[in-house]
Amino acid sequence: MNRPVIRRVGNGVVIDTYNKRIAIDKVPKNVSADLYLVSHAHTDHLPPGGNMKVLASNETIELAKLRGYKYIADNGDKYRDIELIDNGHILGSKAFLINGNILYTGDINIYDREFLKGFRPPQADILIIEATYGLRKYIFGEYNKLLDKLIQKVYKSLVNGVNTILEAYPLGKTQLLTNIFKDYENLYVSKSVYNYNKAYQKLGYMKETKYKIYNEQNIIEPILLIKSNTSKIDLKKFRLRTKIIRLTGWMVGREDKGLPLSDHADYPNLLRVVDKVAPKKIYTIFGYSKYFANELNRLGYDAESL
Image (cartoon, rainbow, N blue to C red; front, side, top):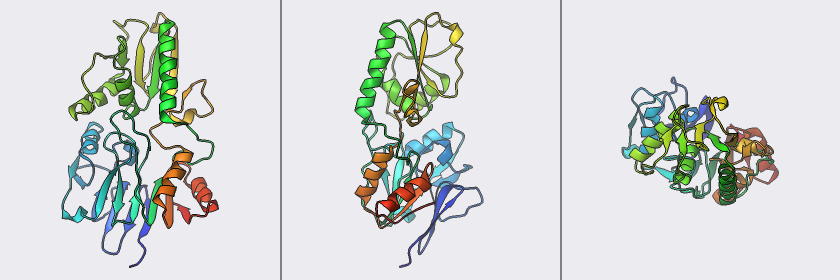
C-alpha cells in the first residue's frame, strides 16, 4: 500500500489514501472530498457550512451552530475506519485516528480539566500534530499549579476590594472559569461568554448558577468578571480599583499581565505526545510548525511542516 499523500489546504488538511480523500477542518469551499472531519468549534477550524455533512462530535456540531456554521452529522458506515478520540482542547473537541495508522491531533491539551478529559494519544505510524506553542520558550507548567496560582490571585484581589477581570477566548476556557468560580457571590460574565455557557448547560456539562450577565448598571463591587478578550469594558464606570488578568499561553514571560493558562499543549507536552505516539513520520501544522518540525528532526524523528 502506498503512503498516503498529506497536504495543507487553506487552514485545513487533505489526506489522500489508497481509496478515498479526507478533508479535515477549515479547508476552502472548493475542495471536494469523500469525507469531511471537524475537530472542534473554534472558527479557525470550521469549514464553510451550508448543510455540509461532517463527522464531528455532537457538541462540536451544536456549538458551531452558535457561530453560524450549520452541519449535518454524517455517521455512516464510511466512517468505520475513523476513531474519534478526546483531545482535551474544548468541549467536544476530537482527534482522529484514520485507518488505524494516521493520527490527526487537532488542537490538544493533555490535562483533565473540570468536565474535560485530557488527550491520551494512541500509537500511530503517521502523526499530524498542532504546533501552536511549538517554540522551546513556551513552557506553561502543570495545569493544577497554574490554577492554584490563579485562584490565589483572584481571591487576594477580591478580599482587598479590587475588581478582578479574567480575560480569555469566549469559547472554551471561559466556561471552565465560570465553573471554577461559580460560588462567588458577585460573579459576572460578558454576553458572549454567557451565550456559550448556556450552550454548555443545554448539552449537560454545566449547571445553572447564580452568575449574572455584565452590564454597567446594577453591579455590586468588588466584582469578578469573566469576559471575552474582544469585549470592551469601560473601567471608568467602576468605583473600585480594577485588575485585569489575561489567560492565554501567550502570557509566558508576561506574568505581570496574566498567566499562561491555556487550552493548548505547551512545548514540553507536545514532545510528550510525540513520544507516546512513536510515529515513523510526523507532519506539524499551525503556529510554530516549521520550528517544531526542525526540533523534532534534531531529536531523531522524521518530521516536516505542512
